[in-house]
Amino acid sequence: MNEKLQFQLRAQISQMDSISTAPAILMPLLEMLRLPSDRISLEKVVELISYDGAIAAQCLRLANSPLFGRRQTETVRAAVMALGLERVRSMLFGLCVNRVMPQDKWVIPPDAFWRHSLGCALVTQRMANKIEYPEPEKAYLAGLLHDLGFLVNSVLYTDGFRECLRLAAEQHLALHVVEEQVLGFSHCDAGQMLCEHWGLSKELVDAARCHHDVCLLPKAGPLACLVHLSDLLCRVRYLGYGYEEFMGVDLGGDAAWQALVRSYPALEHMDLVRFTFDIDGAMDQIVATVDAVFGAKTMTAPASG
Amino acid sequence: MAIEIAKAKPVAPPDSTPVDPAYLKIRDLIYRISGIYYSEEKHYLLKSRCERRMAALRVTSAPEYFEHLTIRGNRDAELRLLLNEITIGETYMFRHPAQLEALRNVILPSILQAKGLISLKRLRFWCAGCSTGEEPHTLAMFLLEEKDKLLAGWSFEILATDLNDNSLEAARAGIYGEYALRNTSDAMRRKYFKDVGNQKLQGNDLLKAPIRFERINLSDDSKMLFQKGMDVIFCCNVLIYFDLASKRRVVQHFYSNLLPGGYLFLGNAESLFQVDDSFRLVHFAGVTAYLKPTAALAGGGKK
Image (spheres, rainbow over the protein chains, first blue to last red):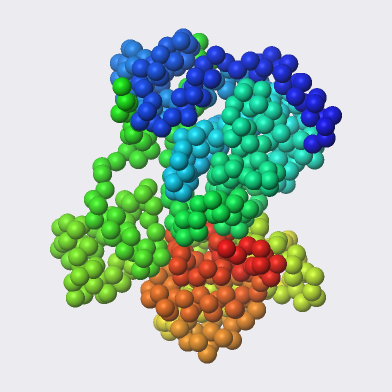
């Protein structure tokens, strides 16, 4: 990406009305997501949700939906208990993104975006656990946020980005490759800038920036590598951007894998086949979770809830 | 207050009763011996397969059945019976559409591109352990359908081998009933089969032309040495019956039989972990395969 374009994009991001200021709930939410589940306090979550009427309503509605047995849940606390932390935090993230993303600007179908983001978050976390990465929750977060650049492209370059998606789907190509050709930059660049603009940590910024090319950084951090591999795995396992890419993925031969092996020698002896069988088995689960949390009914305007 | 709801019950499987740990042991045993793996979400399948064997043995608990598989005198025979149970009903036409999709979308285009540089435009496929012939016939239909598209200007042949004479005879005859044809469209049936009465269809000459049937024992080193120049080898649910040493030998043969850039397909849940590390594991949509790297890849990609 050339310097002029970089400068221009950065300026545009800071002027984007919807995106320039992160929703008030986002920062405390991201703080919370960084913690291991057993260190998150229920009170904190309830407090966070209660700040925001629309989100609280959404929580209650989901907890009272047939999916959860139509319990008569009347407090945010009871709703959070009924839904479980996993679902609550995915939902919070979804609602945050929906705040910054005007409904008519979606280019990638929203359900594909949610499935891919959440799928990637869960796979990244599983992989992190597998290699005994010390902060698996942070890995989850990095997976969840890695494609935020799509929001920027959808809002600022709606037509161009729509053309990218059309070309990529038609020719079964990787979207970032087409973005580079058509727009001159990819969602990785845009994601990096948005994450920087929102003041996210350097590791998260790097994961967003390098998840398609870990060689961009002289020393790719493990987080970027994990996200890169999970992203590949999700895309080759029907959790991509809503179309099929024609590709074969050799995880073990990937530069990110080799970088990880250097830091985590245990990986070299890992049974990659068994791991991917496990991930395959979990994919249905991931899709079910995403549909439960972001399903069409729950994603419509919270005001009606 | 620490939150204790983090492990809330998952949404998907309605029946989420905890799995008997003995099944986990059986799962690991099967994986270690045969290479077939059941992920957590597939436990119900494993359970139902075991239960059929348990009923036959009048065994009532999973731990007791685990003993039958590990310490009782008949353990080898029992393990074989369980593996039979696991692979039962595995064979019908178009059983693995994801394999064919991977061939069409990724594998064949890359092989054609590499081989297109030399003048001999011929592809060789091998179904090793073809049983009653569903797999080679499926492959033949698939390739014949691509003849004027992807494979325009190319010729191809399929070697279909098995150890069992009865299976081979059935495969050669190519007569199939409704079960084997359940995934075969009417158009395909009309084009590649003829009605032989009794609600059976038999493959016609068009379908049989590219297939050569032969009896080969995969453990017969002298015969294995002569199957060179393969582009893609299919060997589904065959190696699961081999012990580790024989498995290694067969897989090494496959490796040298394949051309660089060629692929080996195993059964859907089969793994080569700790059997071989010359192949590269490659993921495609809905299926995995093993690649024999080209010289350039082999240098860079090896661990």
